[in-house]
Image (cartoon, rainbow, N blue to C red):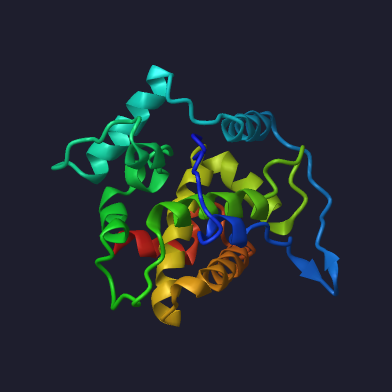
Length: 223
């Protein structure tokens, strides 16, 4: 996962949105006993944890190619700006919703659904914060997740190696739907993100969810 090295000022969202507290019950963080992981779960969890440690490096051809591919898919009719320009430096992350659900990505990028608020959320920064939110919610950076959502996520990894990427796609759609439903403004983005997290946690706790496609919110990607 390529992480964005954005230069942001005090008036931007990135510094105000995180961290979120873990889910709590009666003031205490909800922790569970972690079941023994299968070899497959261990490999896939470790791979995801390693992805989180990879920063974007503009000097690497692999990262440059990923950035160019992202731009071509997002803006097929526009020339890619110089990677050294201020604009180019902002395009430093590879967005899984674009790779896996291009129609959904284009709809989100160009704000095609619903009546948009006067103050729209910044698309790229929203994606970055959604990534951080999922990492925290799923407790991925710990040795073994101990949160309810994190343990359920381990079950999803058995069936889907790309479970995190697919959850990100769903979460972004959920966030956009929450934004419209709440008629949110720029300053309410944090509330929208928290509401999205709560909704996703509830869906992950459903007993009949064994695959990302079983989540009720998955249907948002098929609009």
